[in-house]
Image (cartoon, rainbow, N blue to C red; front, side, top):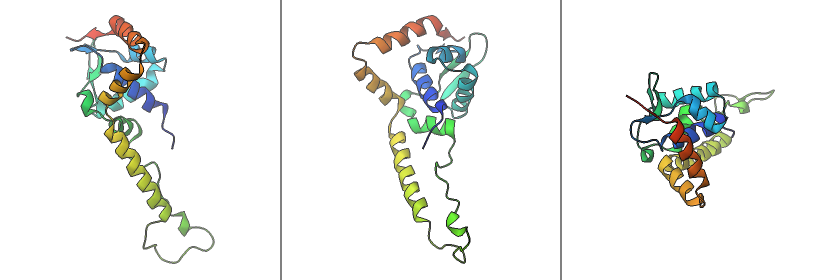
Length: 165
């Protein structure tokens, strides 16, 4: 399964927004600049995150984005579903019923392939649901032993964070 680049961009953006001070916001342009991605493509995903109540949009010249809920209440699955949609990755089209010699009548049991794929999807989604943005930040803090990643983000936020009215 391949996810769009938007999933990675959305997770990184949410993680960055988690480091804003109270009342702070970050513009979509600043998020795109920090991550070196297309502002219009990122904006599409920020709108999806807003629609899923993961981020909050603050309008106006000093506006931007901030988290809509605590980091412990935002799972990776929440972000993936906001960006990619809720449809399963595998969709059984019953091709076993096509071709020159299909089995007569409608199958009474689900396709074994579809059943296996659904089982895998449930496991995948359960794992993504288990991991929150708070967990991701905690893991990053453990692996950023020299503090370079944190310093880069802090320096950028120092310049680009806006205080909303």
